[in-house]
Image (cartoon, rainbow, N blue to C red; front, side, top):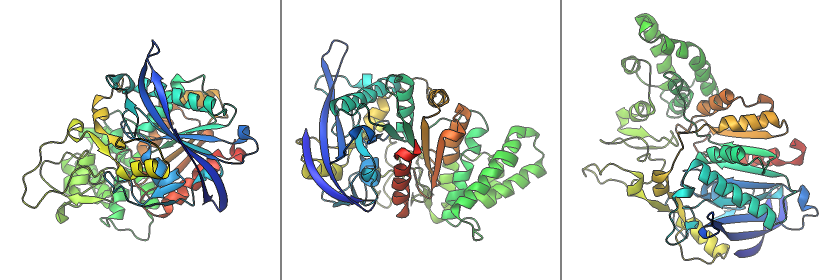
Length: 464
């Protein structure tokens, strides 16, 4: 354990706080230790009644991702300019003036296989690499932290990003003995079923990307207005045309393709040739094809060279795990999660061992793609239905949801559709849209302040 006492200014307030990097041990059914999990906690000093002070537990997704992005790009009291994979260890951290630490204590959790958290030597980590095993692991860490820090009476909140939204929902499903005051979901990750809805739910995001790259006429509209216009079309004329399928008259098909072209920036004949069904790869590899570029998936505003053999996901230029290829070099072998393996984030590791004094010589793993490769999704169980049921059973349980207009990995409308179909009570939902990517607090410099302020407002006692 490493404990340091620090000061900062957040939301205009001078705040003294204690930073604690702690190791928690997991055990098997026989009580033998199996893994260690690291938490990074920031607790405000001098609070008169800790029972009234809320605590927010945060984790990212992957599923093999550390908490580093939410921690060091968004909510933490100290942030740096980029948590890109491989960022230099010497990259300077600075105070985050919008951190909600003035209002809520923050605990960041790195699940087994991420960050500095590891299976113990000789122990197979796969029991933790599943929907239920992972949820029970993180649920246990939260319960242990609350008990060890005498905070069982404090209002408690949980924030998950990307796959972390599934983790949060699974914790609620498997944790009726660990109630929460609020759940925060960022870039909700869901699988959209059916022959029509996968295309319907991505179209508004494609329109946002086309607006950004000026492949459509803006006519003074904001990205939000274009997104909303595309959403209205997707939920009416577009889905009707897709349902008609081969019965759709050619003239009507052409009219719908023309309308789509004006929204998403692809040629009318291309859209018609694809029977109005534009996949994510169709969009990424063709929107800027005339410039020899492709768009990103996590962030459609990011571009990279359009090259033979690209698959669309792991070679995403917004992900940054593929090194630049020399001109004329042959295409690399197909990427797989195991080929990439654990991807370090040395800047975050340096911060934890340097500024926060955590004693380890291990490498801090930002994303462990080997964990992703071994993950048991348990038939892609939809735990958002369990979350919605818990909200209906407890009208005081509130849900915060945030989405980025430029996120094609977990498109904003796909997330909202998932929540609506799960039966999430609309009166208990706070929805937030950002002109940003998968990490909604990134992109526009104003996004982080907007995100931090929204989180602060959600956890304040006045909201409960």
